[in-house]
Image (cartoon, rainbow, N blue to C red; front, side):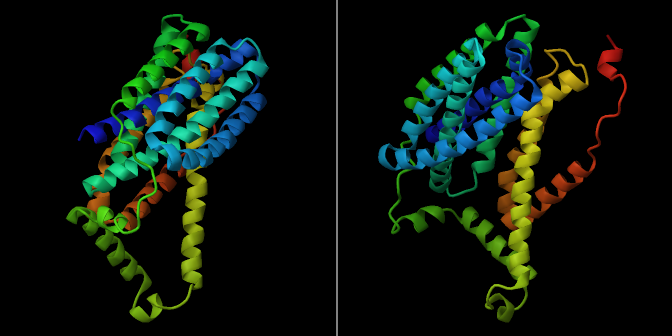
Length: 327
């Protein structure tokens, strides 16, 4: 249980720091004179470097364990957050936020390695609950930025304080995280995955759903058909669409609230907090739904809800916003 708690905390610390970096974007624009075009390139650069960090994470974790990557990555992220807050110019800022991107990707990959190891050890689905903790950290991070704005703390003071909290969290995790993420011998991996009957039940439900969709044995045993290819393409489209929508909300909600809806500096981070709060709800019930319904039905349900939510979006109407009208 201690390993599960520590792994949950790692997800929360990562979510906390990430939320602070994202919801502070309006402050970067004001402090360094950045336009939306520059912010777009910064976000793109962070994503690219995060991918590189994830790739490097696998190599280091195989040699030193995922715990080393998580703790080291969080310490690197803390240093980067402090650098972002103290940066006096664009070049220093770009260097600091690039370093944060590398750390972000490395920690993301390594904490998922640990999450899967802990999930296997418990023999049940746990990843959704870990990501609920990540979202909870996101809520706290957004509230911290909002509180800092209310208190009149500038980024050169507020972000180093956040960095200190992340570093303290990393030090605590260094003593408690499991040392997982190393290659698992093939002889023991299958037994670890199916150790618990509930985990096996989820796999059985997936198979039952696939059988119901595909049809009789003759069709199932056939080579890849246009139906299978279409299914893969549909899943790929969903996997492409979700990060786009998620990034739009995560990276631009604070800027949208402040620049378009004229929200205050303290109110702008709250849009991200609301988004993360909704994620907490879905992720807390996610593991139970997987065990009850199977992964296939859960993917269908989540995809349908996401499509319905996206269909309700409308571009803002020109004219004074409620926020500006109330001032």
